[in-house]
Image (cartoon, rainbow, N blue to C red; front, side, top):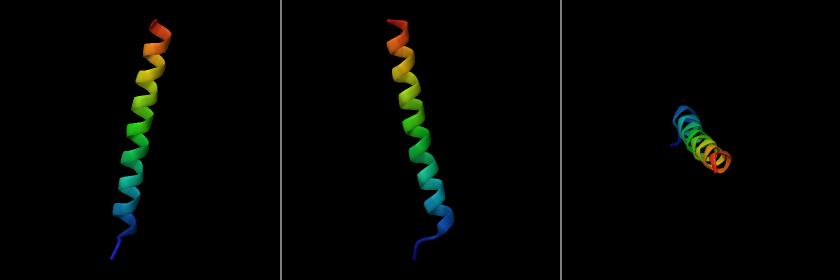
Length: 32
């Protein structure tokens, strides 16, 4: 049985990870 709340939390965690990775990549790219 999959709970919507857990599924939502997992999606949010993945989204956050991608966002942070992207942010770090852009900062690194802009800095040089």
